[in-house]
Length: 128
Image 1: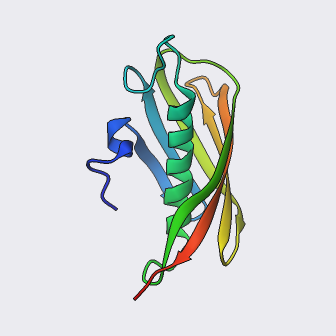
Image 2: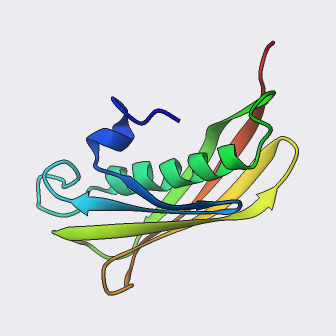
C-alpha cells in the first residue's frame, strides 16, 4: 500500500499496529491538524478514524478480487487537544460479505478519550 503523496502522509499519520481485525495509528497535533482556534480539528480526527478503518477493512478482504471504500462515518468529539500526539485504535465489529463496521477510539498520551467514531466500509468486487 503506497502512502506517499496521500492525506495519510500529509497529516503525519503513522500506522503502528496492523493485524486482522485491529489497526493502531498515531497522528501529531500540530499545524497540519489543528483548527484556527488551536485545537485538534474534528476533520483531522475523522480522517484518522477513516484511515485506520479503511486499512483494517482492506486487510480482511481478498485483495485479488475485492477492494474497500468508506460508506459512512460518524464521530463524537469528546475532548479538545492542542498539542502532542493522538492514537487511534480501530477494531472490527462486523465483517460481512458486502460491508464491515469498525469501532475507532482516539485517545491522548494519558489514554483519555478524545474522539469515538464508527465507520461502515463497503466491500467492493473488483472488475477483472
